[in-house]
Length: 302
Image (tube, helix red, strand yellow):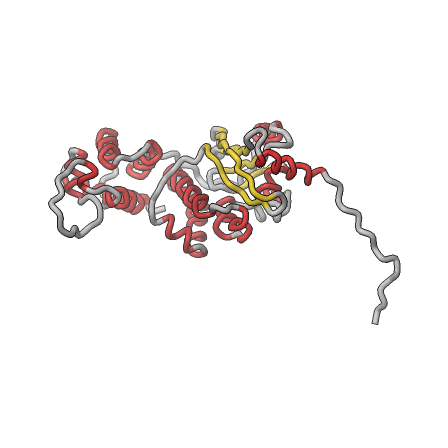
């Protein structure tokens, strides 16, 4: 990834979101040439020179201090995720760099954790590129029942959650609030890019999605970042209908030679229609296959 360009784009989009009156600066009316704050206005708020800020936005200053970055974060009103992303982009040498290793596999301990969550908890294990390394039967049934259950075990066919969301037509049916899911997914992906600036496979994924999905391209250009570690998602499953499920993303720290792996687990409110739907989905995993009676008469070959 072109980290200096990413830094400049991130800063420009963030200052474009603020108006002078939002941050206590006088506004005298009239039409402004640029949306949001000007460079000199942001520099004033952060207590740095306009020339220095301009060099930083243009990617020409790679040694910004913590104090300067903290001041810019305050001036831009960045949240914790955006602040961390700013630091990674401004000083890529200090970001968590992970070389693109051989195809990742789910770690045995992470697999055992996923399987220990039981038959009524959908679980999916993801790496930092959002490749699906493992899913339990209910996780597979919930999010990828149209794919082979053992697909995550084979690198050549391994699903990718970002690719599924933007390029698989099933996702448009599965998520009734698809636009919300898309925005959250891209914002989380941007955080990973900041933490792994040299990951070629991650850059190739972004390039593929940019070429094949106009929606991805439009959302990516907004430069939003968000750590999606918990929340709720709405589903409309083809077998059991509507569900609202809570999710928690449990991050297993990186092991030597490999990036971190995340355990995504879903749950339903006890006693809710969503819990009933989830249990109904569970029952489809253990229900015997319907018996099909075949005509004993051999077809006539003509």
